[in-house]
Length: 137
Image (cartoon, rainbow, N blue to C red; front, side, top):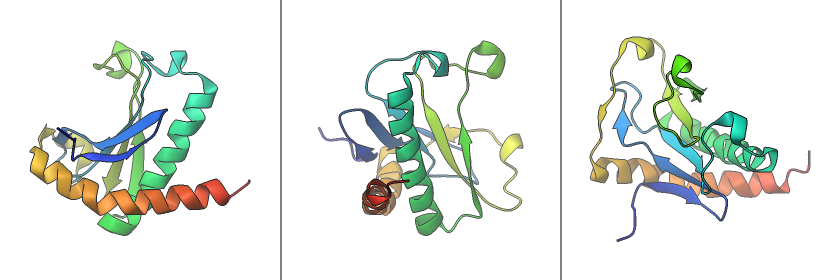
């Protein structure tokens, strides 16, 4: 069965709508390497570059699709920082004025709802990646 929550996927990285949401920040995306790396310390620079390029495309797509006021990138390393999943992942979270983000708790988001967010982002992410690929700087 094909996953409907995938926003972007290539040989190196996958971006998908997270399984849980913050109530005021729904539709956030995780970007992960397809190969296992426990955290940022283990991540090769080349793969980190691909993740950041994908994250930028997702962030720009979110700004357009969600009309959010800002974007937050969140990545945790080790238990002292709250890492609970032992595979590197970068959260891309839409932010809104007065969204109460730090005080809200995440809750499950059904697959059909994740699919709606993915559909809003998918073509915009692809377009942004084409622009970023053409940008030689």
